[in-house]
Image 1: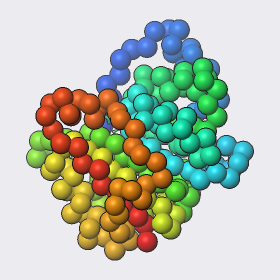
Image 2: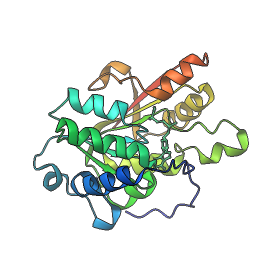
Image 3: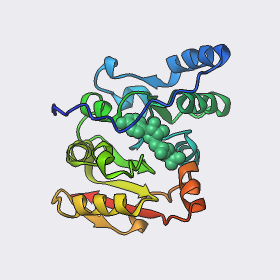
Image 4: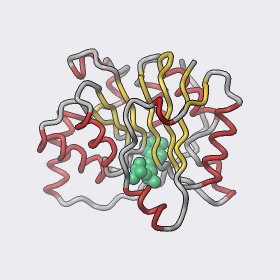
Length: 222
Ligand SMILES: C[S@@+](CC[C@H](N)C(=O)[O-])C[C@H]1O[C@@H](n2cnc3c(N)ncnc32)[C@H](O)[C@@H]1O
């Protein structure tokens, strides 16, 4: 499937320069754990050498939730997508140090990875935790969850797969609830239906510290 989407980016590249040593480390570890759209459609059985269910986390930041989940659930495979390279490097480092074999990462725009690299009906779950809220009204169009995104995840989840969205911005939660509730491809679920509880993340703690509420929304693909 190909969707022509306008290049409205949901992220700004906040690159912190990595030291030469970290950059070299990145390049070396990337050979082992990195995936790219240029390689074509991802064959997860070949990549992970097993047939375990695949869970995708989009915008994993420094990888706290991704690593916690993958450590706790060795019988699931995880694919992470993040454009923030120092965050990707932190995950690559942990994979190597702890010998974690059930995570692979993309470092490209998630919309493109979904569209071009992940097979339809291939994912057991898609996780989107504390996605950039773009709180100003004039920036709402940059929020990742919009109709195009929902079309993509609907195609990539397998039947009864679920989408877990968490945010500390009430109006973003309302926006997502509104879009998902009218979408007949999904059913709203109770939080208990998810395979594993959501690990805490840095941006969740920032939200709590700022006095904001935390909203977890879960939808199952029908
Ligand atoms: C607010 S941070 C949250 C990070 C992490 N999930 C957490 O809860 O701590 C959002 C992250 O999503 C990433 N991101 C935003 N849009 C993205 C996209 N289209 N593709 C890949 N990553 C994206 C950003 O680089 C950023 O690191």
